[in-house]
Length: 243
Image (cartoon, rainbow, N blue to C red):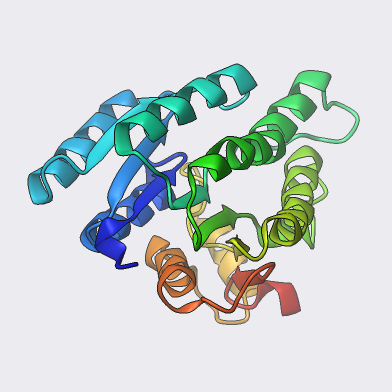
C-alpha cells in the first residue's frame, strides 16, 4: 500500500514532537487524524495548514485520553470520517516532576492513565479499523529503562508502555506491527535553564541535544522501511542509555 492511501492517528499532534510527526505524515500524502486535548488553537491551525497542501486530508479531534469513554467516542468518529486507520502513533504524554514522599494518588493516576492506560485502550479501539499491515508506534522514553528519582510516576508509566509494546506486538502479529521509539534529550522542558541544558549535553555521549526531526526519522524508518520489525525498542537518545 502506498503511503498516500494511508490514514494515521497521532495523539498529542498539535505541538512539539507530535506536530513534527504530523507534518511528516502529511508530506507523504497520508490522511491525518490530529488528536489534541487542550491545544485547540494549535490543532486547528495545523489541520488548516495540512488541508491547504492536500485538501480534505486532515482533521482535528479533541479528547481527554484519561477518560476511556472519550477514547472510544473519538476513535469511532475518526474511523467513520476516514473509513480506516492504518497507523496509530501514541505520542501524547504527561511529564511532571513528583518528589518521593510528596507524590499524591492524583499524580500517580495522571501519569499512568495518560501514558499507559490510554495507549492500551487506543490500540484496542483502533485495531478493528486497521487492515493487514497496520502499525502502532509508541513514543516511550529512555527513562522507562533508566528512571529518574524525582519522576517515578512518569518513568513507571513509560516502563509499562515498553511492556505493553512487547505484549501488543505478540498479540497483534502477524497482521499488525508494534514498535516503540525511546526519545532522550530531544526537546527539553520549555522552562529549562541554560545551566540545565548544558548539564544534559554533558551527560549525553553525543554532546548535544536532539531535535523533533530525529524522532521523525525513526518514525519514517518504521513506516517506510521496517516491514520485518515488530516488538522493537529504538532509542533516539544521543547515547544516554549507554552513558
